[in-house]
Length: 259
Image (cartoon, rainbow, N blue to C red; front, side, top):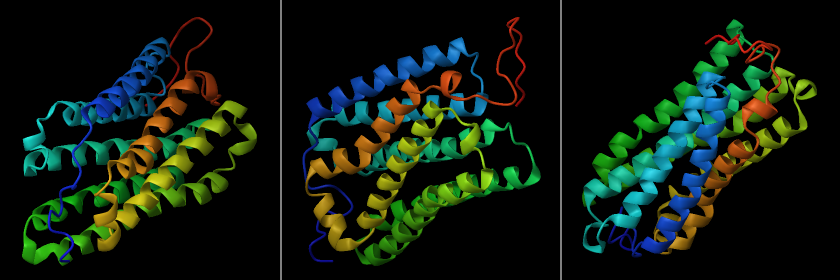
């Protein structure tokens, strides 16, 4: 662990211009998502609000990166804030993937509810494990323990991202999905899998040091997958891509969807 002298902080100075530009890009996707969700009366509600919150958290995280003075970038408070915001955004997209395929048949069976609860529980467990990570990371004598919790948290999250594929197969929804919906699910789930795989790689001490030494790793394998996933959701918004057996809006304009 001798090479982790600044652990858990990155050794690079965050590029404020890049952070600001990426925040603006996500902001465009956020506006597009919000307008389309308003047009669809925020139906389906769970996907609408999950993706809205996911957009907002990543925008805030990038704004913090772009505005925090250099001498405060490696402060404990800022480190916890930016990591927590990113973690929330990432997890909400992963859960949205599950919700989307269950909405195709408007599935409300016990098994579908258990699957969704299981996915949410694993994502929450992964987030809960970040608490001891943040507590132990700043104690030089407990770095090994912090990496153990990092591995556990990353493994839970990666499992949720990968188990999406057998769940999608089990749901037998592909034949009833539009081409836009299939593209959306493939793009979003693949990007989430890439981001979670990178999280596992970062939980290995030697790779943690390397990835936190160059900002390009952060943008290429953490931010980029999430940003492109956001754009995919905005381009293939459920109001166009989701053809559910339970219509969102009737021909007369009445709201027919249920929570």
